[in-house]
Amino acid sequence: MNAGKSTALLQASHNYRERGMNTLIMTSALDDRTILGEIASRIGLRENADLFSPEMNLMEFIEERSHGKKIACVLIDEAQFLSEEQVWQLSQVVDDLDIPVLCYGLRTDFQAKLFPGSAALLAIADQIREIRTICWCGSKATMVLRLDSSGIPVAEGEQVDIGGNDKYISVCRAHWRALDLGPHDKIQSELPLAQ
Ligand SMILES: [Zn+2]
Image 1 (tube, protein in one colour):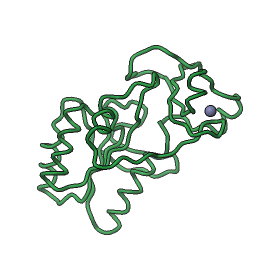
Image 2 (tube, protein in one colour):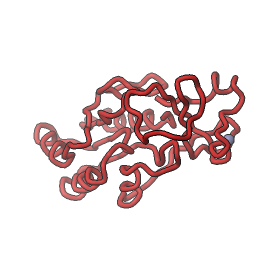
Image 3 (cartoon, protein in one colour):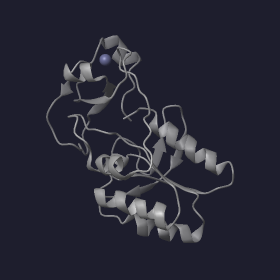
């Protein structure tokens, strides 16, 4: 989903690295919409990333990595795909290893249900910041529509569509309720499609 979150993540990492500090960037192994092991933003920035899978213990992984070279910050993309347990492991990284962890992700899925990772983050994160996105109508986009391979909005399906050709767009709540994509020319030219 492109709400500019990958750009924000890469910018945050850059801010550390230009001061000579080391960051650890991770993204989900579940996310088939980007090249595995890479985070790319629509404005052309890209960085290699380590992958997290549902069964990984992130506290152990990050602790081991921090032995080689001190990590100033951990940045996690597609954080909605974290398990609740992994979010608690990341809280250990913050509290016990004293390494800040920044997680970037979607709040809800295309059916307006919280992702488990997002629910845990909303519950226990020290700080929550919203990255604003705009619907085609100009209102604040808070919802996600899933489009099938022919561009038709879908209402049913699995929360995580692995290997699918579906795309996602950000819309305001009113247009989400109407399953409304807006004028077609705007979709082609202006709507930020999911990455
Ligand atoms: Zn709208």
